[in-house]
Image (cartoon, rainbow, N blue to C red):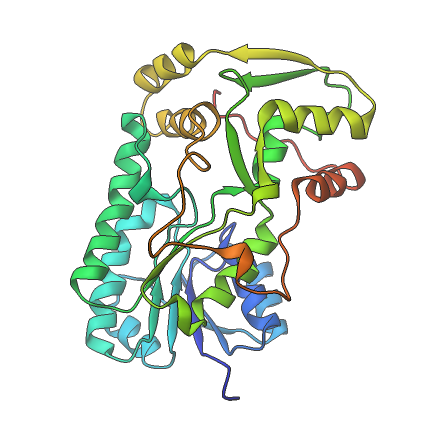
Length: 314
């Protein structure tokens, strides 16, 4: 192993954002380990990882000895576990304490900066679980980097604009449409996460992925899309009051997506606070890297329309 390489273990590596981290880790030359369930249905993706050089470790987070054994093989641990498994990270923490060799742990954040945001109750309950993991890491004095990657750009552009429906003439706007949201390309999130995870300067820091050019309102996003497509879309607004009511009346967990929409696209939670103190904004860290702009992401959608996005209000 070269001097600047770290052995990286990724939990949730076959998931939506985790797969980008696995590929970025391999691309940057790090020995990359992926912890996955023995019965995972992502067999094609796992084979792809293996063909790229990843080491697959099959096991479950409930298997303490297996976790400790895996952790002793690596230097850095990244968790990209999905929401239902957030508290399973407490099992990873216990194993990290026993292993005693981990130089950095990145828990499954990668969304809004949960220590700087308040939200409607369904989303707040979700954020509280993530805060619980952060506080447990700090209490255990495990070296960490906490990452706020904000919105997954491709996912939310697909959701907001529905470019997979070329004949669609109407776009839904949440609230006034004027609040800014930070949209970052998933491949960039993967690459910056690996860079940050292996950067000694980011030891015990909060890193926020918020390049200024990627803070855009819904109305600005629609305007950009109209210019690229040559179309004018009818804008149908769903009021803040309607969204709040849905968050109160939809059953759990259907009430979480609407609460996220309220926080991000009505209240502007990803862009409405100053970054200061020990917090770091990621786009200035690595001169050789550049976040893809929203404009560039829209060009990708224009050339390769995606499959239809799922709706939060179904």
